[in-house]
Image 1 (tube, one colour):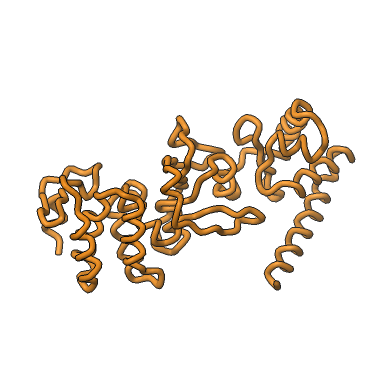
Image 2: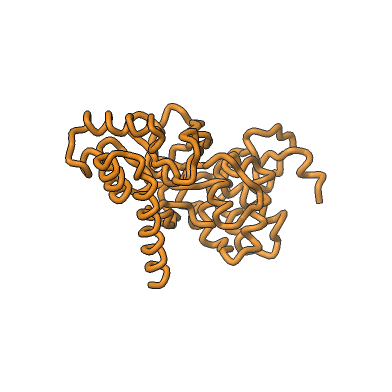
Amino acid sequence: MVYGKIRLMSEKLRMEYTMKKLEGLGSTDRERIGAIIRGTKGTVSVEDAGKILGISSTEAAKMLARWAKKGWFSRIRRGLYVPIPLESKTADMVLEDPWLVAERLYAPCYIGGWSAAEYWGLTEQIFRTVVVMTKQKPRDRRPTIKGTDFFLRTVSEKAMFGLKSVWRGQVKVSVSDPTRTILDMLDDPALGGGIRSASDMFKNYLRSENTNLDLLIDYAQRLGNGAVFKRLGFLLERFAPEYPDQIARCRSMLTAGNAKLDPTLSSDRLITRWRIWVPTSWIKEN
């Protein structure tokens, strides 16, 4: 209740400041921009503006383009804009909240990989690229939008589980929960920045209050990638031998064939009990 009142007051103050800053515009533009900011949540499409102002899409597109030239909005892609932060001195700005833009551009989607790991405190590394797991099949998997890099991965409908909704301003954005975050990295170590970085996040997960290995194994069964159990079993035996029951569960679910600990690395040692190829460096380390 208190948080809701504070957020309401914050929005009211923001709008008052917005209208004050808009005094340099004509009265019609001030009213229209104010209405659009009140009626949208972080991003503004041509359709949004047309609906709010009761005008055609053509008129709305021209209006937003004109305001973008004046520095009140910044174009993300054709037909989609974000308001320029009030404190910004230039229209050449970085995204204030990339998660909002990801939700608008790539939904149905969720924030995953190292971006989710940062959110849940599983890593102290700072990643400049935002990982987005989407049901879409975008041609550009590494777009850069207003100075923010995105790393896009396509997931199926059945893989849209283990997610949490979090508020970003007035918008709910889906992010993988801590256990699903680790699962995705076991499925594809590149989502954690490679197996070395992903294994560090896994160790932090094991030390965290969110540890739930039985849930992780259940998630892995649901995802259906046999390589996950090979990587998980190997890492558990290496970093958490105090979980013999979960290690045994992984052993019971091994599929035929051999997998790599990290598909991007040269791996010349086969751990036969886990049917997994690992780099020699992993064998030499304690």
